[in-house]
Length: 142
Image 1: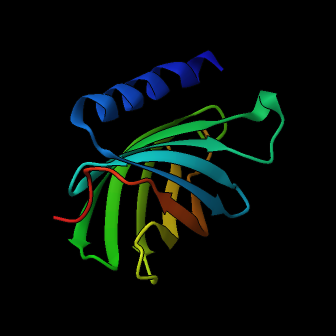
Image 2 (image 1 turned 45 degrees about the vertical axis):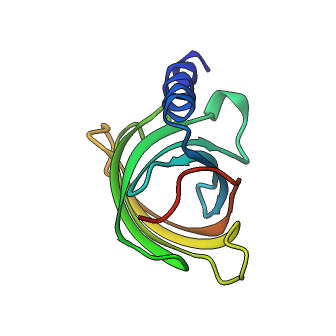
């Protein structure tokens, strides 16, 4: 659990200093996780914590994602990050988030990520889908 503290502290400090838009999301997959991220225009750092696991199997990821195509109703992103504990190593996510409603606070996303690059085991291709909620803030599309 101590391995999760530093990434969380860095993520929270980054958002506080920059007055970014806070997001929370849930990704459903065979390796599900919940995340907290900040929208910093085209960049969004994302802290991800595994769910549906015992405390001993808890894993954390920290990714820095870039929005390659950033529109009001959707964005495509890709990123690079790291993961600790299960499937430790590099993480390379690619995904899309869509905001279909007039109020752009609730969205849906799908992502494919290669996880565990550099781990002693073979890397894993994780596909996930889920929901995302954006709290009002100064981030957004630009």
